[in-house]
Amino acid sequence: MKPKESRKELFDRNEEYEGSKIILNELNNFLKNRRRELYIKALRTIRSGARWSEIKRELDINSKILNDILKNLKSAMIIEEDNGYYWIEDPITKEAVKKLRL
Image 1 (cartoon, rainbow, N blue to C red):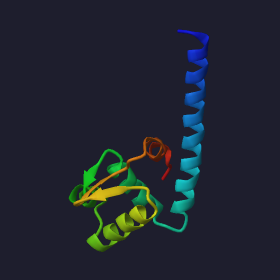
Image 2: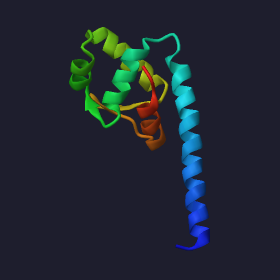
Image 3: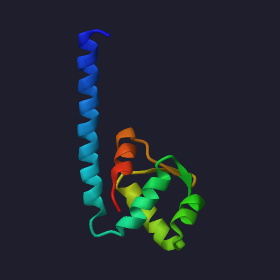
């Protein structure tokens, strides 16, 4: 490995770490005054992609609450949805979701 390559890799890794910190901070701000535990469980379930029914089963909540959570996450552009299938598109956001604390 050439020294320039390892510096670039170090830079890329540091940039990803900084991006993850920023996204984590933004997620924590988004979760203020919300039902944090439910939102984090939803995000962790959705992280790898999940159907509405899977999310509902995992969270064990009524449909209206789940719909509100999903609507808020979509409005904030944290998750994507297509025909009842939800996922997190951004890899840095996926990583930040792992670091969220209940």
